[in-house]
Image 1 (tube, rainbow, N blue to C red):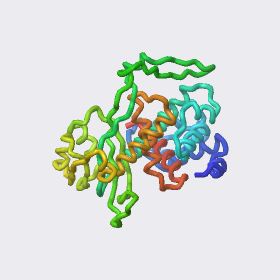
Image 2 (cartoon, rainbow, N blue to C red):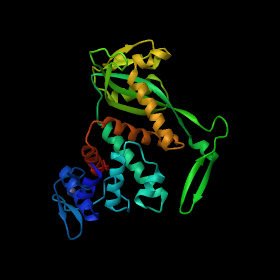
Image 3 (cartoon, rainbow, N blue to C red):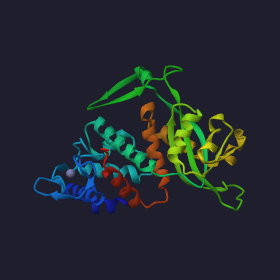
Image 4 (cartoon, rainbow, N blue to C red):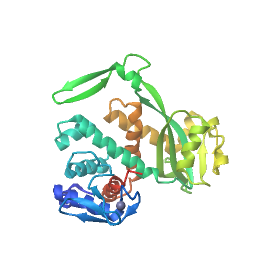
Length: 319
Ligand SMILES: [Zn+2]
């Protein structure tokens, strides 16, 4: 959605709130007492939904991404718009400036919730056909290392700056990268001869076959062709009903044999370096979610992108 369309559709708090209410009614509301989706009515006088079966009431934001947040709908919608339509990610400070919010933590929390919703939305998608799979290593700061950080006070917000004191304060986090990649029949001499589909990037504790298999079962359809290098952690992919194709991948053939995983890893790293000066290990998945969400929707219109995330935001998080 272009900025002018956004302004026209969501011009004020009422427009955003009404849209959010209508989206919830359209998706169906899970009743907290009945514990299933039931028919609900909107009670305008008290601004609550009412279950037609047990008559219990649900607040407008309850059970959604916006639960327990005090930010107006208009601010939420604006942040979602900016995060889903910009090509490059926003830093928290930049977002804070754009929406004119005093508290850094408030904006940071909103953005993290949105990144979680992006991950949930993409988590429903099963990769299929043919994929490339490999691991990438991302610089991240672990919690125990965060002692070596400095809090910088800047008027009304606090930012954390990581002090790099030699080795050990940063750690290489392992990320499993899976990208749909199919051959384009025609051989292009100076280009990749494969086209890319959907991607997934997941922080894993280790590259053992247990950790890898867990992610594959969760996110890859049976019968998919999986191209990997010869790492032993991939050895049991065949037992999961996949067609496993392990090949020797030496340094310079990486771009030929597994072109898209390497492109995706390089682009993510470049983007993170340009926006977030250091990433805590526990939040790395959130930043990956945002990167992959936009990557997977690179051919979507802006409007699809925004509406998709509102749908995810409205989805009940209770059960
Ligand atoms: Zn009920």
